[in-house]
Image (tube, rainbow, N blue to C red; front, side):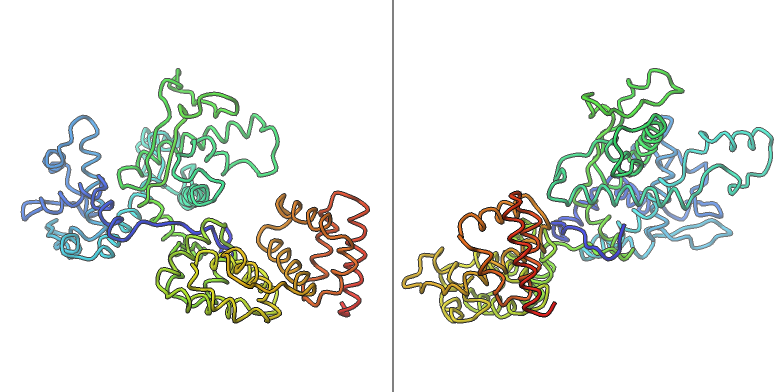
Length: 478
């Protein structure tokens, strides 16, 4: 994933809410219980793991029963040690004591709690990246032969496995935060697996690709089973009835099959926080709604330029709640000025922000009526807010605002269907539009006219637009 192109902004729960979720995560809660249970009689091996004789007692403390009880207890203990909830005080004696971080979970701040949870997540992700050794033929052969196991000789790459899982979580994060994504809905496991295997431009998948997707789907089924107890995901596993033969894996569905039977996964609010934290640590630009609330209007308008419309509005709402309406309107208008390439989109975002401000902002809009760059949008706002005696704009201002608006839409959406409709409307409503438009003294005039020529479906109108673009470039020496 690119470390320079920003992801859509995520809406996070408050730190206090996330900390409560972290403390309620079953695996962290178990680790805390074991840390409080551990005492002078608790013994660990050289690696800090509970000795085998202690596992039944640990499982009993956690209320675990069944053949997997010892394994789950061992996993919870590993989290306790790795996160500093338990500290090994004497490796030779194998004795432990409560770790310093255990005290953070009661009187500590939400940030302290989340720091411990992130450490636990690191442990679980590392475990999830290691395949089940019983499923590796090479491992079975080495064990049967009684040889010392050289893990580097096995047919798996730990670093590649970890990168695959990180990529899956990043893909799930992107699907969650994108406006066209599932929002709070779960993602089918085959869709997630296919996003990692199939190229974007692939048509009908080949049998080989389908097999790879199926293999990835089953790996993810195992991994998400491990990740759910730490609170990262809500997970519905693959329906075991689909696997009629224990040696076969279900093929991923690419038809109208009930896809939910193939597994469904959703990042929890805590999971969104966790994955975003890891993305930030990896250098990915992953904004969160509310981060700009204490910044200046210039940062707000530039920062929301790449946001989807709903996220931009949410950010603006938070920014405005901290300011007096009239002062906020003046600050927004001042930040919207400029002749640089980003200025049209700043002015579009300024219009969106001003639409959220009430009548108290009217004096600020009246002050810029004669401003060449802001007078047009000021008249639009005043008219929409039923202000009295709004002066009619001169023709030059109308055309300048039109060019500015199209330039902003180009920057925000590219050659979208909405922009094509705007272009068609402009050309049909204004007779002789192109004969005047090329004279507009706006830095983006030629670019806008070229776009109109590219987007308009009528060949005659498109040709007029291209001719006007040529004149505009000649006029400005470009």
